[in-house]
Amino acid sequence: MSQLSKSQIKFLRSKAHKLKPVVMVGDKGLTENVIEEINNALNHHELIKVRIRTEERDDKKAMIEAICKQCNAHQVQVIGHILALYRRSDDVKIVLPK
Image 1 (cartoon, rainbow, N blue to C red):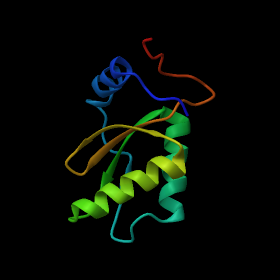
Image 2: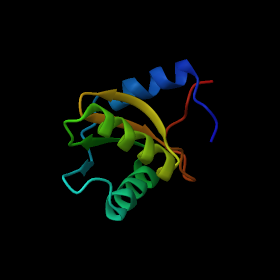
Image 3: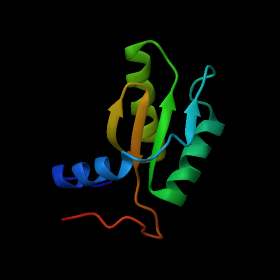
């Protein structure tokens, strides 16, 4: 997984701005089903938002790191409880700037 450049992250943030969260991490935390849902959404859309329901800042940070690692995805942005994720799929939908 190659790193994204600053201009690519900026581009993805602007694309993510109008998106609604498609997956929610609830009270049960990061279950296999949640990871599977995130992977499916990433395969389908490449850029998604995930709502993370936790009050603890450290828990949220740990969850975000786990999601990125398990889904092999890039963290684009975190605002409040909303995480924007990007992972390029085989069927490229978003062409990133260089």
